[in-house]
Length: 314
Image 1 (cartoon, helix red, strand yellow):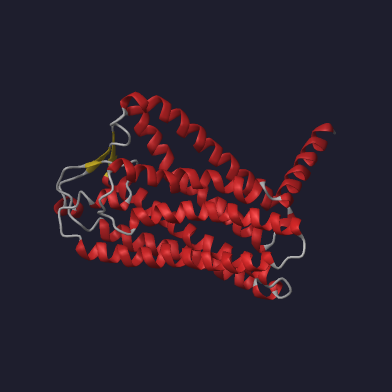
Image 2 (image 1 turned 45 degrees about the vertical axis):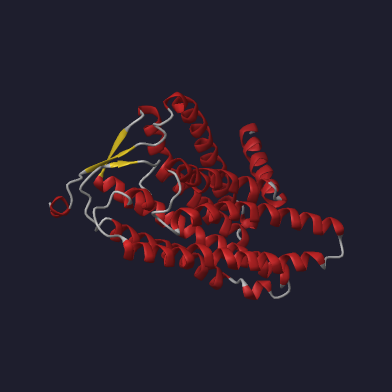
């Protein structure tokens, strides 16, 4: 095989949290519960928005796309991590590692752009309510969604192909929870300086630029909130925006620290915790932050539940 000519490594070993053998069972239990909660919470959002016609508006359709990304993001990382925790040390083939890295970058990149689009949608709705239907029409919505997904594909294709073009001649132990770029790059037997320059530039464009635009959007939203005559209305909108910003800051902040400098001085354990923040915690929190605090989503859920109860009654 051509790959074997370039590299003597045919598989990698994911170490996960093998440095803490006494915590393996507890971590497995916690991560399994979190993973199942993530799947359930996001699946409920996807189903409710699909079935409830009144929610077929940009705000909720963006949220539906975000839930699809979060479910997929978790599914790429969590099952493999649960295997690592249950067996303490596990091998992953060269091709499987390539595939996992590709989909982590794909769904991670898509989420970066999607969160930016969602912030723009909220900015347009709150700051320009009268012209909002024209600003965020169906055509604009589709363009923003397509741009987010296509950008994710481009980021994943360029970065994964570049990383796996490096030779890997050993060792083959990845001291991480998954085949993320920074962890795999440390094993490359070549000069990765150019890639690190690309990683810095790419992270600024893909992570920092959307994050700054989101912050600017929410600053404008904050000024719009302060002009609201109703104190109750101000408190409600401010509470929602604060929750959104918490989730966004957690996701962008930890992703930025991980990817802006792939061979950074953070300890392996610190990198694992940062990775868990955006791959485990954010997909779990998003349904709680964006949906369970939303009265329209609650009403739609109750409506679907009553329909189900009534159908069983007859």
